[in-house]
Image (cartoon, rainbow, N blue to C red):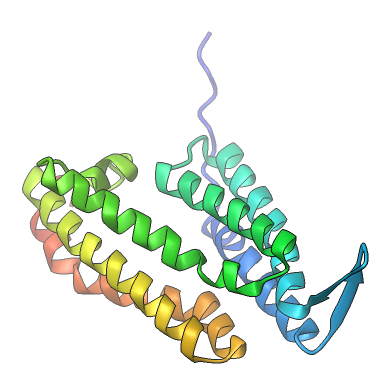
Length: 201
């Protein structure tokens, strides 16, 4: 008996699942940033409360994306695991610095892993993305090298921002700044992707 093809969710639904948790994080932080909440005898500042709101929503959004699309990339899964671990540690230690290092851990780890793959003569980026982009081998290797350096620079940038700027600045960086930097990077590699594209045009 043949299975009914899975219906791809609309772009609006995808964007809501991808950016909804971040917007909730931003909203809760702006609402609670000057407040303190007492839970189980401990005092939690607004940033930690925003983390408490964000992490379960991120988990639910990822599960919903998996159910709707029938797939979940290894990068999405790894990111979710690190978010859950660092979110839990932030609450248990009641220390916002732990969650502020989230992007440092995530992108630093991805960068190191990509360089290990390159050292072995392989593009682990293609493996992580499940061949989401139809590129030839040369294109994958070039893009992987660029992405590895980008991830390490991204991790370093996150360290500079959370250690030297206010929490307000960090939250804006975490919700909007990172997406803007990633978008600029992808646009900057458009010619490479177009040159090595092997799919339909």
